[in-house]
Image 1 (cartoon, helix red, strand yellow):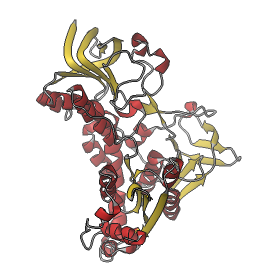
Image 2 (cartoon, helix red, strand yellow):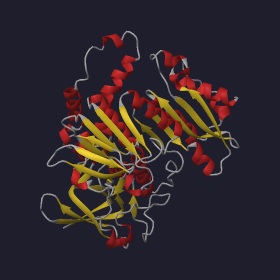
Image 3 (cartoon, one colour):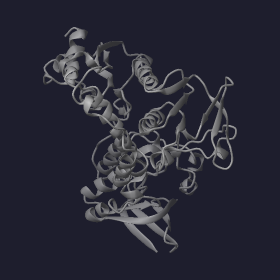
Image 4 (cartoon, helix red, strand yellow):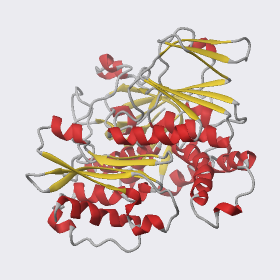
Length: 467
Protein backbone atom coordinates (compact mmCIF):
# COMPACT_ATOMS: atom_id res chain seq x y z
CA UNK A 1 0.00 0.00 0.00
CA UNK A 2 1.17 3.54 -0.67
CA UNK A 3 -0.03 6.80 0.85
CA UNK A 4 0.91 10.27 -0.38
CA UNK A 5 1.39 13.55 1.48
CA UNK A 6 3.10 16.84 0.79
CA UNK A 7 5.55 16.26 3.65
CA UNK A 8 6.74 13.09 5.37
CA UNK A 9 8.73 13.37 8.60
CA UNK A 10 10.83 10.55 10.09
CA UNK A 11 10.88 11.12 13.84
CA UNK A 12 8.23 12.58 16.16
CA UNK A 13 10.38 14.41 18.66
CA UNK A 14 9.91 18.19 19.07
CA UNK A 15 11.81 19.04 15.83
CA UNK A 16 9.78 16.60 13.77
CA UNK A 17 6.51 17.65 15.37
CA UNK A 18 7.29 21.29 14.62
CA UNK A 19 8.27 20.50 11.03
CA UNK A 20 5.00 18.69 10.38
CA UNK A 21 2.95 21.20 12.37
CA UNK A 22 4.37 24.24 10.57
CA UNK A 23 3.75 22.58 7.21
CA UNK A 24 0.13 22.02 8.21
CA UNK A 25 -0.19 25.68 9.22
CA UNK A 26 0.70 26.52 5.63
CA UNK A 27 -2.03 24.22 4.33
CA UNK A 28 0.21 21.29 3.35
CA UNK A 29 -0.61 17.69 4.17
CA UNK A 30 1.82 15.92 6.51
CA UNK A 31 2.61 12.50 7.92
CA UNK A 32 5.00 11.61 10.70
CA UNK A 33 6.72 8.26 11.30
CA UNK A 34 7.73 7.23 14.82
CA UNK A 35 8.71 3.82 16.20
CA UNK A 36 9.13 4.92 19.81
CA UNK A 37 7.26 7.62 21.73
CA UNK A 38 5.65 10.65 20.13
CA UNK A 39 7.33 13.55 21.90
CA UNK A 40 10.80 12.08 21.63
CA UNK A 41 13.82 12.01 23.90
CA UNK A 42 13.18 15.47 25.34
CA UNK A 43 9.70 14.70 26.63
CA UNK A 44 10.44 11.34 28.19
CA UNK A 45 14.17 11.00 28.94
CA UNK A 46 15.74 14.43 28.57
CA UNK A 47 14.59 17.97 29.29
CA UNK A 48 11.24 17.29 30.93
CA UNK A 49 12.14 14.55 33.45
CA UNK A 50 15.60 15.91 34.22
CA UNK A 51 14.39 19.45 34.94
CA UNK A 52 11.50 18.03 36.95
CA UNK A 53 14.02 16.16 39.12
CA UNK A 54 16.23 19.25 39.37
CA UNK A 55 13.44 21.50 40.61
CA UNK A 56 12.96 20.20 44.21
CA UNK A 57 16.63 20.68 45.06
CA UNK A 58 16.66 24.12 43.46
CA UNK A 59 13.65 25.24 45.48
CA UNK A 60 15.23 24.09 48.73
CA UNK A 61 18.54 25.75 47.85
CA UNK A 62 16.74 29.00 47.05
CA UNK A 63 14.79 28.89 50.31
CA UNK A 64 17.96 28.29 52.31
CA UNK A 65 19.34 31.58 50.98
CA UNK A 66 16.40 33.53 52.41
CA UNK A 67 16.33 34.30 56.17
CA UNK A 68 12.91 33.38 57.48
CA UNK A 69 12.31 30.78 54.81
CA UNK A 70 15.50 28.91 55.68
CA UNK A 71 14.29 28.34 59.24
CA UNK A 72 11.09 26.73 57.93
CA UNK A 73 13.00 23.91 56.28
CA UNK A 74 12.94 21.18 58.88
CA UNK A 75 12.89 17.98 56.88
CA UNK A 76 14.59 16.24 53.99
CA UNK A 77 13.59 16.28 50.36
CA UNK A 78 10.79 13.77 49.73
CA UNK A 79 12.35 11.50 47.11
CA UNK A 80 9.19 9.47 46.52
CA UNK A 81 7.19 12.63 45.82
CA UNK A 82 9.90 13.94 43.48
CA UNK A 83 9.92 10.68 41.51
CA UNK A 84 6.12 10.64 41.41
CA UNK A 85 6.09 14.13 39.93
CA UNK A 86 8.61 12.94 37.34
CA UNK A 87 6.27 10.06 36.49
CA UNK A 88 3.38 12.52 36.14
CA UNK A 89 5.37 14.82 33.86
CA UNK A 90 6.28 11.92 31.56
CA UNK A 91 2.77 10.42 31.71
CA UNK A 92 4.43 7.24 32.99
CA UNK A 93 6.32 7.05 29.69
CA UNK A 94 3.18 6.93 27.62
CA UNK A 95 2.56 9.29 24.72
CA UNK A 96 -1.20 9.23 25.25
CA UNK A 97 -1.14 12.95 26.00
CA UNK A 98 1.02 13.72 22.95
CA UNK A 99 -0.80 11.98 20.11
CA UNK A 100 -4.10 13.89 20.38
CA UNK A 101 -2.31 17.02 19.17
CA UNK A 102 -1.35 15.24 15.93
CA UNK A 103 -5.00 14.39 15.34
CA UNK A 104 -6.15 17.90 16.19
CA UNK A 105 -3.98 19.49 13.49
CA UNK A 106 -4.47 16.75 10.91
CA UNK A 107 -1.06 15.03 10.97
CA UNK A 108 -1.17 11.32 10.14
CA UNK A 109 0.92 9.12 12.44
CA UNK A 110 2.61 5.93 11.26
CA UNK A 111 3.80 3.78 14.15
CA UNK A 112 6.91 2.03 12.96
CA UNK A 113 10.51 2.26 11.77
CA UNK A 114 10.94 4.54 8.79
CA UNK A 115 13.61 4.10 6.14
CA UNK A 116 14.23 6.07 2.97
CA UNK A 117 13.15 3.89 0.06
CA UNK A 118 14.10 6.19 -2.80
CA UNK A 119 13.52 9.80 -3.78
CA UNK A 120 10.55 11.22 -1.81
CA UNK A 121 9.67 7.75 -0.54
CA UNK A 122 9.69 6.24 2.96
CA UNK A 123 9.13 2.58 3.79
CA UNK A 124 7.57 2.12 7.22
CA UNK A 125 8.00 -1.22 8.97
CA UNK A 126 4.80 -1.06 10.99
CA UNK A 127 5.13 -1.69 14.70
CA UNK A 128 1.85 -3.64 14.83
CA UNK A 129 3.30 -6.32 12.57
CA UNK A 130 1.07 -5.48 9.64
CA UNK A 131 4.01 -5.28 7.26
CA UNK A 132 5.62 -2.44 5.35
CA UNK A 133 3.72 0.67 4.28
CA UNK A 134 5.14 2.96 1.62
CA UNK A 135 4.58 6.66 2.26
CA UNK A 136 5.54 9.16 -0.43
CA UNK A 137 6.04 12.90 -0.32
CA UNK A 138 5.07 15.28 -3.08
CA UNK A 139 7.40 17.97 -1.76
CA UNK A 140 9.83 16.84 0.93
CA UNK A 141 11.00 14.16 3.32
CA UNK A 142 12.41 15.37 6.64
CA UNK A 143 14.81 13.25 8.70
CA UNK A 144 14.41 14.07 12.40
CA UNK A 145 15.36 10.83 14.12
CA UNK A 146 17.65 12.32 16.78
CA UNK A 147 20.62 10.82 18.56
CA UNK A 148 21.54 8.04 20.98
CA UNK A 149 23.96 8.13 23.92
CA UNK A 150 27.54 7.30 22.99
CA UNK A 151 29.25 4.45 24.86
CA UNK A 152 33.04 4.90 24.68
CA UNK A 153 35.27 1.85 24.13
CA UNK A 154 36.49 1.60 27.73
CA UNK A 155 37.70 -1.81 28.91
CA UNK A 156 34.83 -3.60 30.67
CA UNK A 157 32.38 -0.69 30.46
CA UNK A 158 29.74 -2.33 28.28
CA UNK A 159 29.66 -5.38 30.59
CA UNK A 160 29.25 -3.23 33.70
CA UNK A 161 25.63 -2.34 32.92
CA UNK A 162 26.26 1.42 32.75
CA UNK A 163 23.43 3.90 32.83
CA UNK A 164 22.74 6.41 30.10
CA UNK A 165 20.53 9.47 30.46
CA UNK A 166 17.41 7.39 29.89
CA UNK A 167 18.23 5.10 32.80
CA UNK A 168 19.12 8.01 35.07
CA UNK A 169 16.00 10.08 34.40
CA UNK A 170 13.77 7.02 34.79
CA UNK A 171 15.41 5.91 38.06
CA UNK A 172 13.27 4.16 40.68
CA UNK A 173 15.79 4.03 43.53
CA UNK A 174 18.57 6.46 44.39
CA UNK A 175 22.00 4.75 44.55
CA UNK A 176 24.09 5.40 47.67
CA UNK A 177 27.24 5.93 45.54
CA UNK A 178 26.97 7.45 42.07
CA UNK A 179 29.72 7.89 39.48
CA UNK A 180 29.32 10.13 36.42
CA UNK A 181 31.57 9.98 33.38
CA UNK A 182 31.43 13.31 31.56
CA UNK A 183 31.30 16.88 32.80
CA UNK A 184 29.06 18.38 30.12
CA UNK A 185 25.49 19.60 30.65
CA UNK A 186 23.94 16.13 31.09
CA UNK A 187 26.64 14.86 33.42
CA UNK A 188 26.73 17.93 35.64
CA UNK A 189 22.97 18.26 35.92
CA UNK A 190 22.45 14.63 36.86
CA UNK A 191 25.39 14.56 39.27
CA UNK A 192 23.77 17.34 41.29
CA UNK A 193 20.30 15.78 40.95
CA UNK A 194 21.42 12.53 42.55
CA UNK A 195 23.39 14.26 45.28
CA UNK A 196 20.34 16.34 46.22
CA UNK A 197 18.03 13.33 45.98
CA UNK A 198 20.14 11.51 48.55
CA UNK A 199 23.20 9.83 47.03
CA UNK A 200 25.80 9.91 49.81
CA UNK A 201 28.76 9.83 47.45
CA UNK A 202 28.76 11.40 44.00
CA UNK A 203 31.86 11.61 41.81
CA UNK A 204 32.10 13.24 38.41
CA UNK A 205 35.06 12.49 36.14
CA UNK A 206 35.85 14.81 33.22
CA UNK A 207 38.74 14.40 30.79
CA UNK A 208 39.04 18.14 30.12
CA UNK A 209 40.67 20.49 32.64
CA UNK A 210 37.28 21.96 33.60
CA UNK A 211 33.59 21.18 33.66
CA UNK A 212 31.40 22.50 30.83
CA UNK A 213 34.48 22.84 28.64
CA UNK A 214 32.56 24.41 25.73
CA UNK A 215 31.55 27.40 27.83
CA UNK A 216 33.60 30.23 29.31
CA UNK A 217 36.25 28.96 31.75
CA UNK A 218 34.74 30.75 34.73
CA UNK A 219 31.44 28.90 34.26
CA UNK A 220 32.88 25.44 34.77
CA UNK A 221 35.08 26.66 37.60
CA UNK A 222 32.12 28.11 39.50
CA UNK A 223 30.04 24.96 39.03
CA UNK A 224 32.95 22.81 40.27
CA UNK A 225 33.35 25.03 43.34
CA UNK A 226 29.63 24.74 44.13
CA UNK A 227 29.72 20.97 43.60
CA UNK A 228 32.59 20.51 46.00
CA UNK A 229 30.75 22.59 48.59
CA UNK A 230 27.79 20.19 48.24
CA UNK A 231 29.99 17.15 48.68
CA UNK A 232 30.28 16.18 45.00
CA UNK A 233 33.79 15.02 44.15
CA UNK A 234 35.05 16.60 40.92
CA UNK A 235 37.92 14.87 39.12
CA UNK A 236 39.27 16.87 36.18
CA UNK A 237 41.84 16.07 33.50
CA UNK A 238 41.38 12.35 34.05
CA UNK A 239 40.02 9.48 32.00
CA UNK A 240 38.48 6.19 32.99
CA UNK A 241 40.46 3.34 31.42
CA UNK A 242 38.68 0.31 32.89
CA UNK A 243 35.41 -0.53 34.59
CA UNK A 244 34.42 -3.65 36.49
CA UNK A 245 31.14 -4.59 38.17
CA UNK A 246 31.00 -7.35 40.76
CA UNK A 247 28.53 -9.93 39.44
CA UNK A 248 25.68 -10.01 39.08
CA UNK A 249 24.63 -6.51 40.18
CA UNK A 250 27.26 -5.55 42.70
CA UNK A 251 29.30 -2.37 43.01
CA UNK A 252 31.28 -0.83 40.17
CA UNK A 253 34.99 -0.06 40.27
CA UNK A 254 36.36 2.46 37.76
CA UNK A 255 40.10 2.77 37.22
CA UNK A 256 41.46 6.15 36.11
CA UNK A 257 44.44 6.71 33.85
CA UNK A 258 46.50 7.79 36.86
CA UNK A 259 45.85 4.50 38.64
CA UNK A 260 43.26 5.82 41.08
CA UNK A 261 40.07 3.84 41.59
CA UNK A 262 36.53 5.06 42.24
CA UNK A 263 33.81 2.76 43.58
CA UNK A 264 30.11 3.30 43.06
CA UNK A 265 26.82 1.47 43.02
CA UNK A 266 25.83 2.86 39.63
CA UNK A 267 27.77 4.54 36.82
CA UNK A 268 26.29 7.05 34.38
CA UNK A 269 27.98 7.57 31.01
CA UNK A 270 27.36 11.07 29.66
CA UNK A 271 30.22 11.68 27.24
CA UNK A 272 28.35 12.55 24.07
CA UNK A 273 25.73 11.53 21.54
CA UNK A 274 25.70 9.80 18.16
CA UNK A 275 23.12 10.29 15.35
CA UNK A 276 20.59 7.54 14.64
CA UNK A 277 21.50 7.30 10.97
CA UNK A 278 22.74 3.71 10.69
CA UNK A 279 19.39 2.25 9.66
CA UNK A 280 17.32 4.92 7.91
CA UNK A 281 17.88 3.85 4.29
CA UNK A 282 20.57 6.36 3.32
CA UNK A 283 22.01 3.81 0.90
CA UNK A 284 18.75 3.97 -1.05
CA UNK A 285 19.32 7.62 -1.95
CA UNK A 286 23.05 7.52 -2.65
CA UNK A 287 24.16 8.62 0.82
CA UNK A 288 25.52 5.37 2.21
CA UNK A 289 28.70 7.14 3.31
CA UNK A 290 26.63 9.12 5.84
CA UNK A 291 25.43 6.08 7.77
CA UNK A 292 26.23 6.60 11.43
CA UNK A 293 27.14 10.25 10.81
CA UNK A 294 25.41 13.57 11.22
CA UNK A 295 23.53 14.74 8.14
CA UNK A 296 25.20 18.00 7.13
CA UNK A 297 22.72 20.54 5.82
CA UNK A 298 22.85 23.82 3.93
CA UNK A 299 21.35 27.13 5.05
CA UNK A 300 17.90 25.86 4.02
CA UNK A 301 18.32 22.63 6.00
CA UNK A 302 18.62 20.49 2.87
CA UNK A 303 20.86 17.45 3.28
CA UNK A 304 24.08 18.05 1.39
CA UNK A 305 24.92 15.61 -1.39
CA UNK A 306 21.33 14.88 -2.30
CA UNK A 307 20.24 15.31 -5.88
CA UNK A 308 17.17 17.49 -6.10
CA UNK A 309 15.45 19.63 -3.52
CA UNK A 310 13.54 17.14 -1.41
CA UNK A 311 15.54 15.73 1.54
CA UNK A 312 15.90 17.79 4.73
CA UNK A 313 17.23 17.15 8.24
CA UNK A 314 16.19 18.98 11.41
CA UNK A 315 17.08 18.58 15.07
CA UNK A 316 19.99 16.72 16.62
CA UNK A 317 20.47 14.51 13.57
CA UNK A 318 22.05 17.35 11.58
CA UNK A 319 24.60 18.10 14.31
CA UNK A 320 24.15 21.88 14.22
CA UNK A 321 23.03 22.25 17.83
CA UNK A 322 21.95 19.35 20.02
CA UNK A 323 19.32 21.38 21.85
CA UNK A 324 15.55 20.95 21.79
CA UNK A 325 14.76 24.61 21.21
CA UNK A 326 17.13 24.77 18.25
CA UNK A 327 15.57 21.67 16.73
CA UNK A 328 12.12 23.21 17.13
CA UNK A 329 13.38 26.38 15.45
CA UNK A 330 14.72 24.31 12.56
CA UNK A 331 11.41 22.46 12.28
CA UNK A 332 9.46 25.70 12.03
CA UNK A 333 11.99 27.04 9.55
CA UNK A 334 11.57 23.95 7.38
CA UNK A 335 7.81 24.42 7.37
CA UNK A 336 8.25 27.94 6.02
CA UNK A 337 10.82 26.85 3.44
CA UNK A 338 8.73 24.00 2.06
CA UNK A 339 5.78 26.38 1.80
CA UNK A 340 7.84 28.61 -0.46
CA UNK A 341 9.02 31.33 1.91
CA UNK A 342 12.43 32.87 1.25
CA UNK A 343 14.04 32.19 4.63
CA UNK A 344 17.35 30.69 5.78
CA UNK A 345 18.79 29.32 9.01
CA UNK A 346 20.46 32.18 10.88
CA UNK A 347 20.27 31.24 14.57
CA UNK A 348 22.41 28.09 14.25
CA UNK A 349 25.35 30.19 13.14
CA UNK A 350 26.41 32.29 16.10
CA UNK A 351 23.16 32.84 18.02
CA UNK A 352 22.61 29.53 19.87
CA UNK A 353 21.21 29.98 23.40
CA UNK A 354 21.99 27.24 25.89
CA UNK A 355 21.34 26.65 29.59
CA UNK A 356 22.86 24.12 31.96
CA UNK A 357 20.42 23.79 34.86
CA UNK A 358 22.92 23.21 37.62
CA UNK A 359 23.07 25.38 40.74
CA UNK A 360 24.63 27.78 39.87
CA UNK A 361 23.02 27.77 36.46
CA UNK A 362 25.06 28.53 33.36
CA UNK A 363 23.16 30.39 30.65
CA UNK A 364 24.94 31.47 27.49
CA UNK A 365 24.30 32.55 23.92
CA UNK A 366 26.47 33.26 20.92
CA UNK A 367 30.27 33.20 20.97
CA UNK A 368 32.64 32.71 23.86
CA UNK A 369 35.59 35.05 24.07
CA UNK A 370 37.83 32.35 22.57
CA UNK A 371 35.36 31.74 19.73
CA UNK A 372 35.21 35.44 18.92
CA UNK A 373 38.98 35.80 18.77
CA UNK A 374 39.24 32.65 16.63
CA UNK A 375 36.85 34.31 14.16
CA UNK A 376 39.10 37.35 14.02
CA UNK A 377 36.78 39.66 15.93
CA UNK A 378 38.34 42.57 17.80
CA UNK A 379 36.61 41.57 21.02
CA UNK A 380 36.31 43.28 24.37
CA UNK A 381 34.99 41.39 27.38
CA UNK A 382 32.98 43.08 30.13
CA UNK A 383 31.90 41.39 33.37
CA UNK A 384 29.90 42.23 36.48
CA UNK A 385 28.90 40.12 39.50
CA UNK A 386 25.46 38.51 39.28
CA UNK A 387 24.94 39.24 42.96
CA UNK A 388 26.04 42.85 42.70
CA UNK A 389 22.62 44.41 42.08
CA UNK A 390 19.78 45.13 44.48
CA UNK A 391 17.51 42.61 42.77
CA UNK A 392 19.90 39.84 43.76
CA UNK A 393 19.96 41.00 47.40
CA UNK A 394 16.18 40.69 47.59
CA UNK A 395 16.40 37.08 46.50
CA UNK A 396 18.50 36.09 49.49
CA UNK A 397 22.03 35.97 50.84
CA UNK A 398 25.02 34.47 49.09
CA UNK A 399 23.83 35.07 45.51
CA UNK A 400 26.98 34.58 43.48
CA UNK A 401 27.94 34.32 39.84
CA UNK A 402 29.26 36.27 36.89
CA UNK A 403 27.60 38.12 34.03
CA UNK A 404 29.76 38.61 30.94
CA UNK A 405 29.26 40.01 27.48
CA UNK A 406 31.63 39.71 24.51
CA UNK A 407 31.56 42.84 22.35
CA UNK A 408 32.59 43.32 18.74
CA UNK A 409 34.37 46.64 19.20
CA UNK A 410 34.25 47.58 15.53
CA UNK A 411 30.47 47.17 15.23
CA UNK A 412 29.63 48.03 18.86
CA UNK A 413 27.36 45.00 19.17
CA UNK A 414 27.27 41.99 21.48
CA UNK A 415 28.34 38.69 19.91
CA UNK A 416 28.25 36.51 23.02
CA UNK A 417 27.04 36.47 26.61
CA UNK A 418 27.37 34.17 29.61
CA UNK A 419 25.53 34.37 32.92
CA UNK A 420 26.09 32.22 36.01
CA UNK A 421 24.06 32.14 39.22
CA UNK A 422 20.57 31.15 40.39
CA UNK A 423 17.78 31.44 37.78
CA UNK A 424 19.92 33.22 35.18
CA UNK A 425 18.08 31.32 32.46
CA UNK A 426 15.57 34.16 32.54
CA UNK A 427 18.25 36.76 31.73
CA UNK A 428 19.84 35.13 28.71
CA UNK A 429 16.97 35.77 26.29
CA UNK A 430 17.65 39.49 26.42
CA UNK A 431 21.15 38.74 25.15
CA UNK A 432 19.73 36.46 22.46
CA UNK A 433 17.51 39.28 21.21
CA UNK A 434 20.42 41.74 21.27
CA UNK A 435 22.63 39.42 19.23
CA UNK A 436 19.93 38.33 16.76
CA UNK A 437 18.83 41.93 16.26
CA UNK A 438 22.39 43.29 16.09
CA UNK A 439 21.35 45.92 18.59
CA UNK A 440 24.12 48.44 19.20
CA UNK A 441 25.36 49.20 22.69
CA UNK A 442 24.13 52.77 22.32
CA UNK A 443 20.61 51.51 21.60
CA UNK A 444 20.76 49.03 24.49
CA UNK A 445 21.46 51.92 26.85
CA UNK A 446 17.83 52.93 26.37
CA UNK A 447 16.52 49.44 27.26
CA UNK A 448 15.98 50.26 30.93
CA UNK A 449 15.88 47.25 33.31
CA UNK A 450 13.19 47.26 35.99
CA UNK A 451 14.21 47.82 39.60
CA UNK A 452 14.83 45.79 41.66
CA UNK A 453 15.50 42.86 39.33
CA UNK A 454 18.59 40.84 38.58
CA UNK A 455 18.26 42.11 35.00
CA UNK A 456 19.82 45.33 36.27
CA UNK A 457 23.15 43.59 35.58
CA UNK A 458 22.61 44.82 31.99
CA UNK A 459 22.94 48.40 33.21
CA UNK A 460 26.10 47.52 35.11
CA UNK A 461 27.61 45.82 32.06
CA UNK A 462 27.01 48.85 29.83
CA UNK A 463 28.32 51.22 32.50
CA UNK A 464 31.46 49.12 32.82
CA UNK A 465 31.94 49.26 29.07
CA UNK A 466 31.73 53.04 29.24
CA UNK A 467 28.31 53.89 27.82
